Length: 256
Image (cartoon, rainbow, N blue to C red; front, side, top):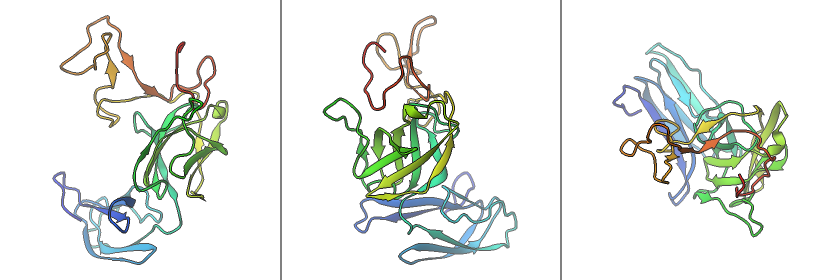
């Protein structure tokens, strides 16, 4: 539980591929002033013992969360993290790909899904097929909303990005599931909204300056500001259904 400048003492726990070239599982664990005294592993689990400090908690939604909010320095803990049961999505691991905020999803929204074992050990990016549509299968990875395969932006072992099918429009909820190499994750039931907009940012963090273009096509920045009354272009995920109605995976062309 290394000490951080901000005073936190979370441990970063990761499982790598045998050759050490890819990440299979990761999470944070601990809390301010927590002390870890022992760690052990078997083929399916990680075991951790120690003493908890203020705000003791787990981050990243491990499969078996331990109690949080312990403020007694003398409280001891034994934690068990299971990473053996195939691919899994974290219960709160679905966010808007632009803002990285959780919440209802919208038709056509680009989302990011966090989990473990949900994709390949090396990131694979978007592909367009011969018909001009974004592929719904990358590196043996697929994402389903109520059984409908979604266009994929990228896939990775702990993070997958996809576009919500427009078919969820008008529904109150949708069931999300990820498939990797024929194995499917747990099912998450997500609320659906008409729109859930988020603006892509310049540093891809969901915070700070927007990823925006000025009228002359240059990137908006602190050193290249927009003039009052001028037009800028923003990039948004989660604007909802379009007119005419959106078609899953079709690359936008004129007329918009």
